[in-house]
Image 1 (cartoon, rainbow, N blue to C red):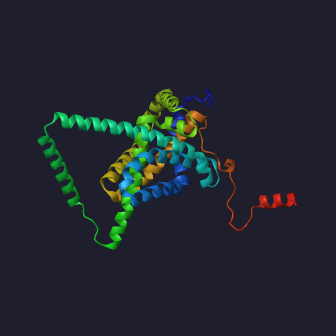
Image 2: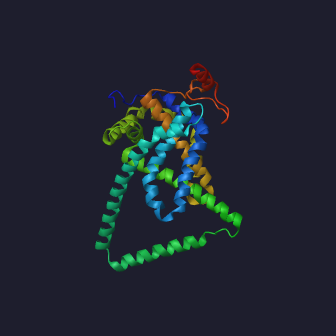
Image 3: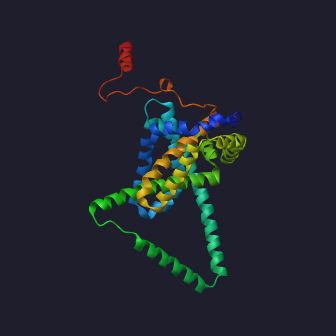
Amino acid sequence: MSNTFTPRPVPSEIIASWPSMALSLWRRSFRPQAIVLMSVAFLLKLFPAWATPAGFVLAPSLFVVAFAVAQVADERKLFSWQALGELVLPGAVRLCGVALKFAAGFAALAGALALLATTLVRHSAVDEQQAAFAAAIGSARATVSMPDTLGGEFLHFCATWMQGVMAMMFLGMFIVAIYQGVFGAILHAQQGMEARAARRLGWQAWQVNAGAIEEALRAAPASFWLRTVLAGVAIAAAFQSVYFSPAGLLLATYVPCLAYVAFRSIFLGRHENVPAALRSGETARGPLVPAMADIRRAGLRA
């Protein structure tokens, strides 16, 4: 990677426009994002024994996939699954390696703490704590009213399905933010930068723009803070009840768009969404009707 690929300072007025630009991209990219995330969540529901470890490993890659969906929606007239695959597959594999390292470190730390707890605490006290924990879980499950009709069971299945999407996305953002940094993960995945250098540049990007971000937040209108509070309440409600999970799905697909807009401004120096007239890709056409360009090329070859 070129050494000139460094974070740029962004004016506060541009930073203030990030949420609206991300919202515009979210409208164009929500459907493919939802298809990818819900497909993975459905596959994990089919194999519940593997859902936790597989979700832990795949979660950071899903965040980068959603980021790439926003990029494709910005740069192309029509969304292309082929373009998405070419853009994201190598980086997704690299981030799976990052997730495995994080999981190994997390498991080692949890195992060491568990061993220390069993060594220092009397076994009777541990047994009492485990019994109390099991009783609390049992009472919580008993208070949850399961649907007793076919329609209710179907709605409950769909709600838990979307809750799985939200859980994976926010787990992925947590792992990315803690271990690699949001921008560091993108640099490592998409640009092929070495993980340590990507992490350093990712944190440097926030430092360079910390003052402008603070200024933009101070000048933000009351409506911005109201929407932020509502988003926080929606996230809390979605984690409390599966039936609020659609709100979590909306937020889980908006955050990658916001991350893409910020990355584009800081690292690429582009502060606006690509206008429709300048997006690449062919216009829509029917599956049985060749494009006019193909007809012209066939006539020239003849």
